[in-house]
Image 1 (cartoon, helix red, strand yellow):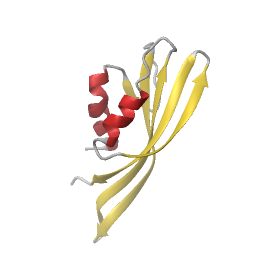
Image 2: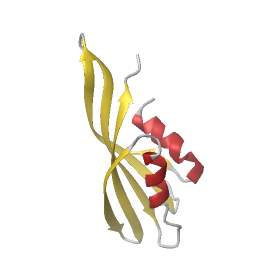
Image 3: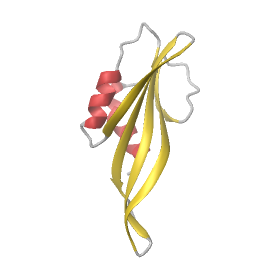
Length: 109
């Protein structure tokens, strides 16, 4: 399972759109996932057994929507994602929180 697939599965109970890279909908709250670096580990005979994914989950919402930032962080940390840091964002009337994580995944054949 890729990092994207794992995050989409974990955040499904929140009932908000979770997309890769760009959101083009009209929801009042949503998450954008961006993997910005992948490093292979445990390589034998030029075949990697593990991959470290460094990624950002950016949660956007209007001020009237419930803030799910802590819930998102809790769900990912509970499934092996290592929380690195959070950055607060504002874009017009939207409030954003960019959460940086790392996760070590098993490379599937």
